[in-house]
Length: 337
Image 1 (cartoon, helix red, strand yellow):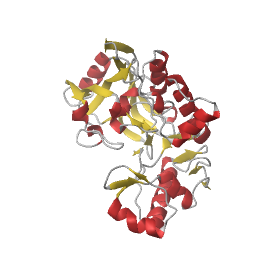
Image 2 (cartoon, rainbow, N blue to C red; image 1 turned 45 degrees about the vertical axis):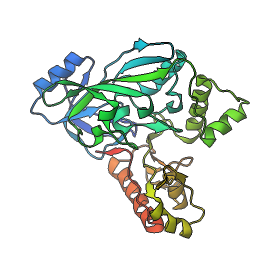
Image 3 (spheres, one colour; image 1 turned 90 degrees about the vertical axis):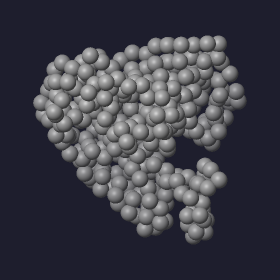
Image 4 (tube, helix red, strand yellow; image 1 turned 30 degrees about the vertical axis):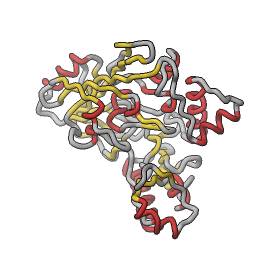
């Protein structure tokens, strides 16, 4: 293991923010991870995956442990289902494509989401009507404090909308090392309920789509709306879509009858944060090197040399404006460091 000092994290966060780690080490095996946790027991630690769901606003005064565990395999299967285990350091999109190449269904709607497999349960990532919890079976994690390995079941992860136990009660206590998914081998439950996917498939005259065709449609949609982090620094959707009680939403809807929303239960609705941001006049706006993407108002971008503090200020301006204009609070989806 090579522990480096004052290490630049610019290439390790998708916003492309320049920030330094007091110490940095890349971990390639479970044994290395146990060793570094034991060796640096008293040091402050910061766990880094793909760097796709965070905004660095300062240098990291800690030991940054980059989880680079690789490998994926089938651990069990029957006629209808397959249980696949992926190590935490695998790139998420590449893993999704691997499952599709094997005709395993369930993850295709989450194609092209940035980041690594190990961080997907933390956020309960999702897109186009599917979430990690739909196919998640379990994950293995190592306790930072005593290096004990624990297996978390789906129920123990307490998944919610962009939520899990790893963002709440167990925050900073565990490092996810591998994840198991249960995927279909046949009779795939193709989900094309979102309008964008329907439109993209229709454009290509596809009426009975395969897993690959759904994945290609999602990739095309995301590429048309979302900038490539390698070309324009960003972290995908910066904000969560706010969920409101219908009793709260009704007076707002009366004041803004054109407001878009989706019923998610008998008592709750979800309002698209991108619509709110666009209506507030922020879509495509630039503030120095920080700004809001021209094609997708949910995405904040770094045009080159923005600091994390500058991007954070843009996000706060958006939140304050939307609260004042609509009376709705929107929360950041990314982790503010």
